Amino acid sequence: MAASAPAETGGGGEPRCRLYLVTPPALEPAAFAEQLARALDAGDVAAVQLRLKDVEESALKRAIDVLRPVAQSRDVAFLLNDRADLAVQHGCDGAHLGQTDGDHAKARKLLGPERMLGITCHASRHLAMEAGEVGADYVAFGAFFPTATKVAEHRAEPEILEWWAEMFELPSVAIGGITAENCAPLVRAGADFLAVVGAVWNHPEGPAAGVRALNDAIAAA
Ligand SMILES: Cc1ncc(COP(=O)(O)OP(=O)(O)O)c(N)n1
Ligand SMILES: Cc1nc(C(=O)O)sc1CCOP(=O)(O)O
Ligand SMILES: [Mg+2]
Image 1: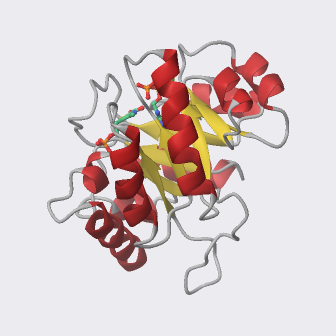
Image 2: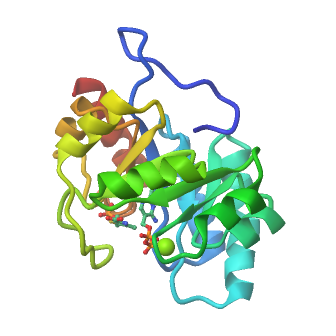
């Protein structure tokens, strides 16, 4: 999902599972830009999603303008949560939309072929197939584990990743409570990306250590 870098491969030449960092729901852009740079410089990251909740649109735009170059200058795709319109207007590489974040077909059209659309599918095969039909660039399943980042009303099992990988080429993203300690079954089940918040931004030794630990766990899975 990187803006231009090729997907890295595992030992067998298969594209391997990669990290997808989602920001904390509240942040101060200038200070967070330093954290983000440290995280991205610590190891392979395919994408960053700016996910701010309960902020004014002006604050969201400022956060995009400060954080987008940090990711894109490193060839890491920068996606915006919830707002396909602002993603287009502010030079993002795509948008991530949930099931209540507006019309997915309209968003697909707005984003055009060059920007990515990711769609939340919870634990539903039906929603994932609908997302594929509407032209999503990835389907996101979750939550796989208990998470402190948000109230997650759906619980997914690794089998849905296995099923998806067997049936479809479209990449899958696993999200929800994922850590270096628990991610191996998701990697082995065929997740193309692991999306994480707490395991990186709340890592006791800092975000760089969080990225390193997750990439080590992916490699060992
Ligand atoms: C990669 C990824 N997967 C799922 C989500 C959740 O999106 P959504 O259901 O719209 O919930 P909010 O993030 O808007 O609270 C996500 N953001 N990213
Ligand atoms: C934003 C989000 N969406 C989820 C879903 O299940 O769709 S779980 C989640 C929170 C992910 O944060 P953490 O890595 O800290 O658990
Ligand atoms: Mg949403």
